[in-house]
Length: 238
Image 1: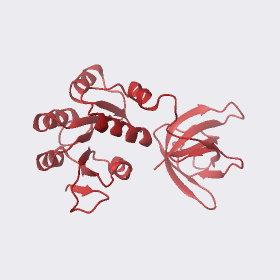
Image 2 (image 1 turned 30 degrees about the horizontal axis):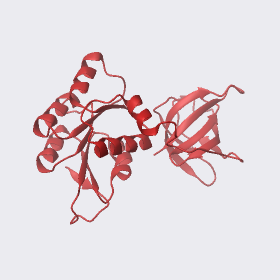
Image 3 (image 1 turned 180 degrees about the vertical axis):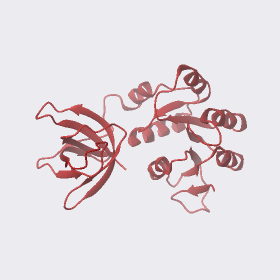
């Protein structure tokens, strides 16, 4: 079943529609509140069939398409959408780096490739750039972000004077007899910087808990902290 999620009354005329095609509801639940507003509606399709129904029913401005869809390949869906709605922009999503042949097809039909997990605020900035400037050719992600941001940060980080302490409740570590802890380093509107005694795998969803808070996030990056065998990690809120 397909459905619309937007933050405006249904009788108000929508100016933009963004379609997210992904079997995983997590992508939709992360992007929909970020991208939907009074002038933009965010649609979801979990199959290629549902996606094509939306394309036939509405003038969709931008499509996010996961490369792995059960009923049709993401590449075939991308081509089908371009055939039915050539004016619709397409952003492909993948869990890793596609091979050269797949990348060639993406460059010929899409505007961008996003590798999961992606930075939510960067995605919002990319969408604003693509829709605002009517970009219609493939963009290198890093080059596009440099053009958008210049020297400024999308995330203004504030260091903690008194770090908070958390217990890590889920990791890739199989030894559940060992307790793992995290200390906060800095915070921004999108996430936390922490140090911890365990190497967290980027892309892993973890939970952090203390006496007053329970935080869920995605590990974006990990580096050695060079002190007492600890690691520094960036956690993006979800």
